[in-house]
Amino acid sequence: MSDRPSPTAAEPEEPASPTAVRVLVLNSGSSSVKYQLLDMRDGTRLAVGLVERIGEGTSLLRHTTRTTGETRERADTFADHDAALKAMAEELAVDGVGLDSPELAAIGHRVVHGGRTFTEPTVIDAEVLAEIERLIPVAPLHNPANLTGIRTAMLLRPDLPQVAIFDTAFHTTMPEAAARYAIDVATADEHRIRRYGFHGTSHAYVSRTTADLLGKAPEEVNVIVLHLGNGASASAVRGGRCVDTSMGLTPLEGLVMGTRSGDVDPAVIFHLERVGDMSTDEIDTLLNKKSGLIGLCGDNDMREITRRIEEGDEQARLAFDIYIHRLKKYIGAYYAVLGRVDAVAFTAGVGENAAPVREAAIRGLEELGLAVDGELNAVRGGEPRLISPPYARVAVAVVPTDEELEIATQTYALVGKGGA
Ligand code: AMP
Image (cartoon, rainbow, N blue to C red; front, side):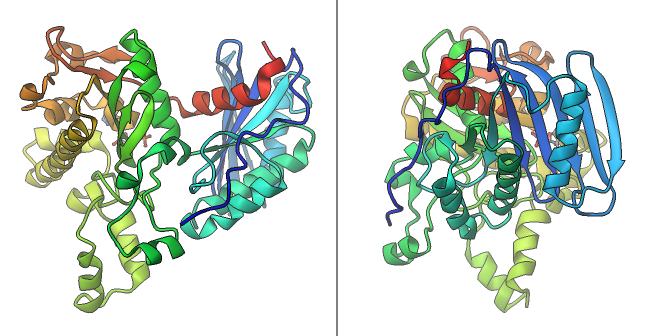
């Protein structure tokens, strides 16, 4: 299979001016837009907001001015992304940080699927838009919504560099041996079936921050990153480059997640079709929305699951055990893939907050040089921190992820060369 040559990292037509120090980050879903405005001199959030239920009757905009902590809410009828982004622009203008400000250097867009084409942050032009559109068959839920957000933002500020940051980009360094499924090559190539991986922005940020925490350059360390949110994925990062990750063609593969099964024997699907009389769409919904923790015990929130376990709930216990068993298997697998591991880093909602998950995932791996210190593990906080005892050969870390900062940083690095 060969996608066309990469059009990545095109130079913006006009470099940002020295005063252009802000980046607006947009994450556009089918009926929502999340946004953050950052000052790239120190990463300060100037504003953080969300528009929900776009095109669904009553929409809600929630805008927080981070410098004052003030939150404003606005219920309105935003018929489409255009209306939603205009409302966002109005709120930013109220704060004196409007889209027409010369201080705005660029808009950075989260784009879920960049296929094999996009390996780096990319300034968006007509050709790039067409390529993101061409990738819709492999990301039917996400890329159309991302495109809508980009097109709308381009109308609002046609003169401003708009940059696409792809969830898949960090994983494009995976060797073919990790990226290919063992299925007929011609069929795989015809349908672009391979392992792309997701959450790449988070894996990039967390692996780099873990190296920082160890006082080393990313090139010097091998890290296993465990991004455990409602969606969950693991990655093996060698010297700053991803060499394997647990999500595949879609985010369904890999770890047990909040509502996704992760790995199953693909024959489960044929079995459900033939014996269970279920349609393809029904099985899709079953595996993506009704499986994982919620399918196993009726809850997908790890707080609730650990609470139920404390009360002696056997179903919650089993769900937890299955979750941990899968996690351990991936830690072991990526240890073997990397050969030498310097750190295991936990991140996202579960990884950052659920001490029992971290403890259970690492327990029993002492022969691999891995251990968790009970007291350090119990500490809560928003900063990257080590939770392994000083004697452990391999560091275990909690590293809060910050995908918006990473998107803004990558965007600014590409367009902000004239900036601060
Ligand atoms: P994310 O997708 O990264 O926002 O993670 C969301 C998930 O994180 C929730 O579904 C919970 O399972 C988990 N989570 C959030 N806060 C906590 C907490 N304090 N303790 C345990 N799990 C948490």
